[in-house]
Amino acid sequence: MAADKRDKPHMARVRNWIDRIAQERPARLALIVFASIIAVATVLLFLPIARTGPGGASFIDAFFTATSAVSVTGLTVLDTASSWTGFGHVVIMVSMMIGGLGVMTLASILGRAVSHRIGLTQKLLAASETKTRLGEVGSLLTAVLVASLSVETLLTVVLLPSFLGMGEPLLEAIWHSMFMAVSIFNNGGFVIVEGGLSPMVGDWLFCIPIIFGTMVGAIGFPVIQDVYANWRKPRFLSLHSKLTISTYLLLWLGGTIAIFFFEWGNPASLGGLQGDDKILAGLLQGTTPRSSGLSTLDLAEMNNSTLLIMNALMFVGGGSASTAGGIKVATFAVLVLAIVAEARGDRDIVAFGKRIPSSTLRLAVSAAFLGATLVGVGTLALMHVTDLSLQVALFEVISAFATCGLSLGITASLPTAGKLILILLMFSGRVGTMTLAAALAMRETQRQIRYTEERPIIG
Image (cartoon, rainbow, N blue to C red):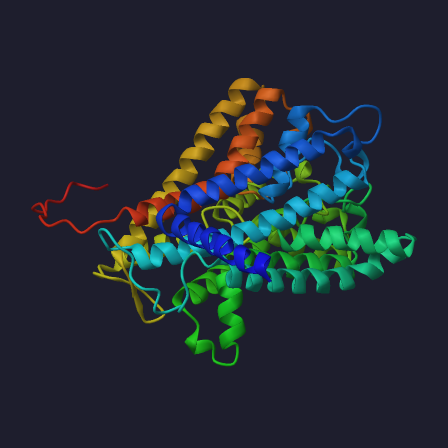
């Protein structure tokens, strides 16, 4: 009893410290947490016990794989199924789980911090809407954890028959189903199946869960929470949820139609399939650029027009506070709405009967510009250290920045400098736009004196 009493003040101090960091330094909190997790995963994967064959993985390969797993990207320099032991597979799976949970939890904390801080000079408003302190991550993490484990358990059960159908023993099939379920929901992109997913191109019981799990993971925890609370009353959904769901579905539909159009007659991709297999492969390929990185087709054999469409889909990514990367669909939606409002001559940006403040537009422009800058600089750097063409380098860079994991098959052959560039892009893409938006919003102040207005010439 005495020990319990002594522990309570200590736990209270830890809780208060987390609360203070979450309120005052939310962006720094995200950076520290993700960097620490990557460091631990790198050390574990560097151990000889994690790598098959004699010796262990090189430090750069362990570092790359750890960053890819924690940032839930899926780019690989070593074949996941054959190059890592059971211990290595566990490290990769747990890293994806922690990475996915961390993204959703930390992004939700950042969002709450921003929503209560924006427009203030020196203080936070009381968290009247949520009735919680910003740093009380316990209940938030619990909600995220329950949602994640529920979906991952469902995916494991649904995927199990496919692995049993391959002739795998029961325990091995359960393990492979668990690994793929985590990879799918967290948009991790790692594949534990020997030979990749190409043999599953016509397996509806395997591919439909990938499509469903990718969408749920990429839509974002705030949207999942909102839909769960208001599924009977969709009109009460928040503007963020309505924007995210509608924009995500429109991009998915448009991207899928474009892929069907450009690849339908390509004998090296959809054109080489028959009937239902062609439809299923196209649906999956329209979903996977949103961040899952799981594909049943050889991307290197696709048309350049298709790769351009996939570049655009990867760059936009999924929902905010989700396991997906990119600049986020809500950011894209705000930018499009701003263009439409300007074209119509409207004074305000309006969506679903709500006016979007100019501060949100500034954040959207900042996030999109940062993303484009990282992609541009990363592409230039990758081309400088390799002999890759612009098309191949750009695809690989966008995939890394958007934490998507799709590749044209050149990742493993990159020099150390090229791998380091992709590592920086994966880390920056995972926490960069999120922390930048929080940092900019938290710095917003109300000036006592405003300058006179004058419009420069645009266009």
